[in-house]
Amino acid sequence: MLSHKARYAIRAVLYMAAEGDESKHFSVDRLAETLELPRAFLAKALQELARKGFISSLKGPNGGFYLTRVQRRRTFKELIVAIDGESLFEGCMLGLPECDTSQPCPIHASVAVMRQSLEYQFGLHTIEALAQTLRHSSMRI
Amino acid sequence: MLSHKARYAIRAVLYMAAEGDESKHFSVDRLAETLELPRAFLAKALQELARKGFISSLKGPNGGFYLTRVQRRRTFKELIVAIDGESLFEGCMLGLPECDTSQPCPIHASVAVMRQSLEYQFGLHTIEALAQTLRHSSMRI
DNA sequence: CGAAATAAAGACAAAGAAATCCTTTTTATT
DNA sequence: AATAAAAAGGATTTCTTTGTCTTTATTTCG
Image (cartoon, rainbow over all chains, first blue to last red):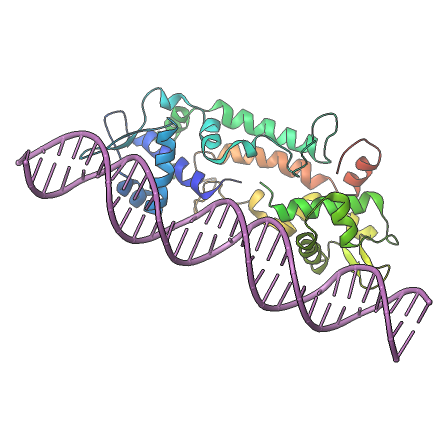
């Protein structure tokens, strides 16, 4: 469903969005320790997100990763797609290259319904919205 | 979403369900050729399904794979779970071991909604139902 | 300036999934 | 009985994902 890379990145991003701001930065060391994630692998994922503009980074003492206000407005779906690609939201689940509404695969309609639900849930919610919920609840991350 | 093994197996099973009966058998060679799938890998997947009782097989000339009436009554969800396990339908999408309704992850509710849709779509439809639709339509497999 | 803290980048290792190949077993047909 | 057609099983290869390690670049601070 989601790759490990995506899971790790999502958790780190939501954690930073909920706990930090533009002036509070998080080192990979701290994120990996807090979230109990493999340090170097998480670093790769965050570097990738930084390269793609989904998060910001600063080198040096007091540096680290953080999210700007603009970056918090990206949707959760965009975040997933940035790491795992469109496969969760597009393409035939059976791998048929010519599958579409005119020549659908046997589960085309079912998958479409499920994806509408996904789109609605993940496409609506911004990073900031999820972080807000996280802040005011007993949710775990 | 679905492993290649699952995709291949599903296509072969639906094809056999739609085109064959208890007396018409399909060799791996024929299935692989018709569906344009890697022969030996498909063979492994079908052997696994046969071992688990989802399809039947006969060795020797005129042998091959086929589905009994009882086997056609399994749901599509059962078929997926038989190959890929429960991960599509159960467990935290962020990988949190303690995620549940009392301590949910930030996307717990969204995932639950999406899974209800999946369960409804895939849990309802039997292999036979999908095969029936396939027979009476211009669907591709 | 020099030291320390941090991200960035690249090479590498381990594990798992995907795919292939070869041998064995079973069975129908001649 | 011999042959051929199939599945079953095992060993092996290849590719991708996951994960680690080491070096380099950048920045802050004393």
